[in-house]
Amino acid sequence: MEHYEIILYWSAEDDAYIAEVPELLGCMAHGSSHENALSNVKDAMLLWLDVAQERGLPVPAPKGGRLMYA
Image (tube, rainbow, N blue to C red):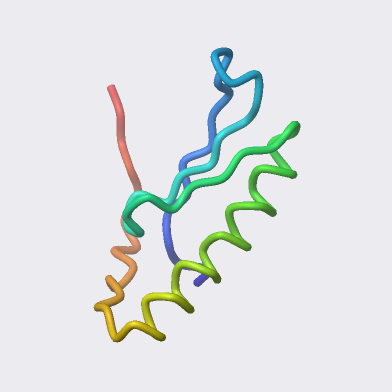
């Protein structure tokens, strides 16, 4: 689980920090601080992976690269 990339950013619209895991479709969480959002998204990742395994769905392998935005 530790090798999935997490994108963490502030959302003024939501008035919260948002953490997204692009490799796990729809896996995201929010929090009042970046630490809280990161902790919440780690919980969400575990749930995402557990549900995928229970349902026999494919789990993408972590890409291990770094995201770049210009």
